[in-house]
Length: 235
Ligand code: NAD
Image 1 (cartoon, rainbow, N blue to C red):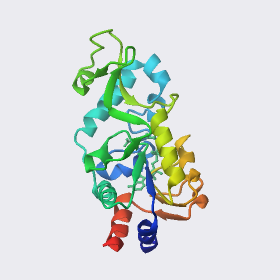
Image 2: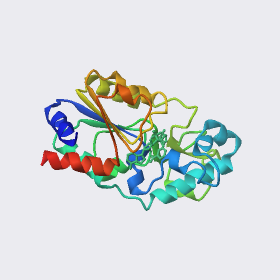
Image 3: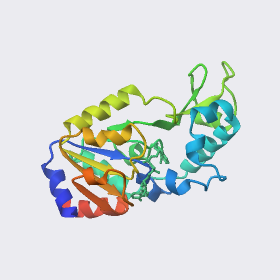
């Protein structure tokens, strides 16, 4: 199947990639599934919400401040490097990601569509003024309007950034091959994106996911290891 995937990559004129939290676990960033219950016995899905930000800002703040601290020590892994290399070689045209950690860009990928925003871009909740990460980590309020600060991630209950959504949608429409990796495909509406494509769709994930039968090819394994095996066939 690795050989098959390598052949599809070479023959496809337009390949796009969709990544989720499983793309980053090999860098040491926990996904939502394995982290559930591990963070002070709070499910991240209950904290990464508009309600938590509005009604329990201290908990919301603590969650994101800890995540930002943790991300400062994290580096891209071989899987991120291979995708960046495939883009340079013209084998893939874009990566649409649900991840907010910036690891694709850190690996050198240029065309990255951030569907759920970026944890690295902090702003004031009230006046939307961009704020330095260091200011957020000091647990301060906005210097201008005293509003609470927040990371530029899309919280549960918020709309996706329209431009990113349009770009990802168009990439899927044009794609002859879509590689979906490290996502449970449980989060709407991103879980609809792969099926916009008229081309081949491939799933690479540690465990079986919803709607797996709709994929032309599905493999269960670690993204880094699978991409390395496909890359070996490309050499
Ligand atoms: P998810 O946690 O629901 O699913 C991750 C999937 O990846 C799981 O099915 C798991 O089996 C698989 N997986 C874990 N490690 C893997 C590996 N090494 N190789 C292959 N597969 C692996 O995550 P999701 O589908 O991205 O959706 C949840 C939401 O969580 C998204 O909205 C995303 O924005 C957010 N999130 C982002 C980060 C991040 O930026 N790194 C981390 C956690 C959650």
